[in-house]
Length: 194
Image (tube, rainbow, N blue to C red; front, side):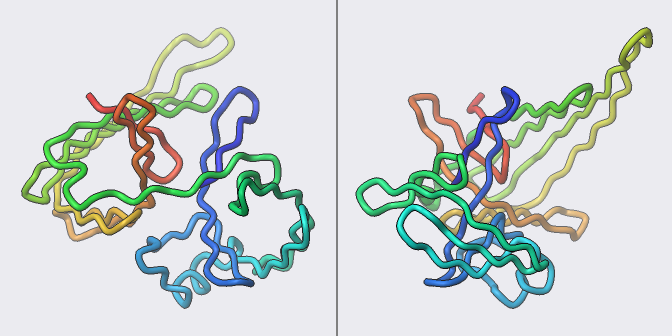
């Protein structure tokens, strides 16, 4: 997992080193296991061939971009990638989320979104999302929209697979982020235990 502060905002991304030459940023189909063929089909721009030499890494991305970035290692483990701090993602234990409720808040400019996820011990969940857009300048007003979804979930390592009751699904990368507060990260958002 890579964290980077930009403009007082915390940005979270996932770096998955598939093998000695292939890097996937933010895999969209989970990482337990990674389906490289599906990632190549749907996430090609975020897949790079890489070569690390000292504190530099040469990257050739699937969309043709080429770049050299700075990297750092602590005790042989990647600790910084292109200015962002890195840490190994801890996997979840199978029942880590049973009977817990987590709340996440994200905002960018005038847009704010909250999400609450209730995980039951029988493998079901409820997810409530609410988004708001505030006016700017002389316009005072707020528009809101929300949705509630239910379904089942499974956890395998750092992958949570949500299967919604409407037949859709969402595969998310996740990890415990316990700094004494029982927090978790799902994709690029921090959730706090309620």
